[in-house]
Length: 174
Image (cartoon, rainbow, N blue to C red; front, side, top):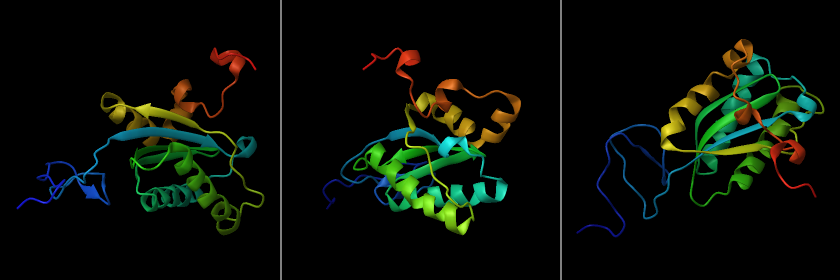
């Protein structure tokens, strides 16, 4: 007898705590299904360049771990000395703002104390961009190759936005 809400495994998807992440043959779907991909970007306070390669690796690992403990999946994490990018598969119960808050809070003290960056802080804002299936691979590549894009001047302005200036964004002024 089938359990209510259970389905047969779908090839190419892997179940990880009620969300889809990665690849595998042991997938199964929980009662609720969602595919919510978001590209996140935010910067250090005053764009202070603090992430050398060693620090960046450790921060990126911490960001991915916080995503996991938030029932989300970091599909790609990248960045340069003054900002980070993530491509995240969100769990349907996690709001973008809640995840960003957890990520920032969970890495601020880590960077300040364990990575020895006194006075470290993230900027207040962030950019969040919805990602469809057709864009997923391009965003994954972009996030994963941040250093190259910045070195070669091939960044994509919309995907680098972390704050909005209403005067230049076409938004009504207060």
